[in-house]
Length: 219
Image 1 (cartoon, rainbow, N blue to C red):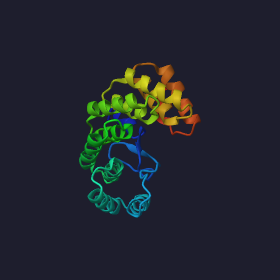
Image 2 (tube, rainbow, N blue to C red; image 1 turned 60 degrees about the vertical axis):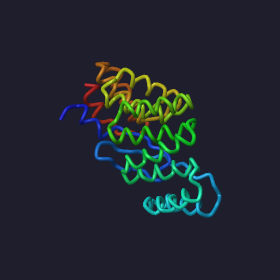
Image 3 (cartoon, rainbow, N blue to C red; image 1 turned 60 degrees about the horizontal axis):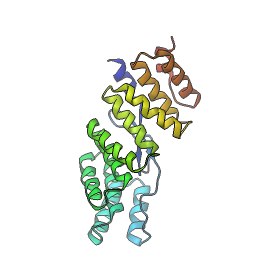
């Protein structure tokens, strides 16, 4: 097993609009962002929102299917159903919902972000980067889009460009321990061992388990 494989279990990809933490993919550990998905106040929307927060994603999808029947042009509902499908690892199914949401509103950065996250999980890193690019174009301070774009570049072994993305994450969120860690990995693979060591130690000081990277980069 190469070093790149060894470090994969340490990296974190942030995924928006899912009500959970610590969910593990077979390839990466996933950190979910806890954000409200539904803006409507009608009873059906409140019901599907509560179902999603209870982590009953299949139930949430059933509720959202009914919402779409009632209002087939509601962008937020397609986004919500898409992220529920992500939670069930139905990444292809989620993309169908995100594509529909983009068709209805091509200027919603969250749709592109979630679409990129699905493509990342499908290991389609180049297309994921395209989606994260669009999310960043629409919102230049979209921290998680920079983060996930950096992760995608690591998987393509484009470490120098990944460093640029994690630099931006750290600029926007100076206490992002996982961004320091991933930047450290990227620096390690560009033979910047001093930089990798510094980032690993900073990551550990912020609470991230960076022991393996410290062992390799700092000795």
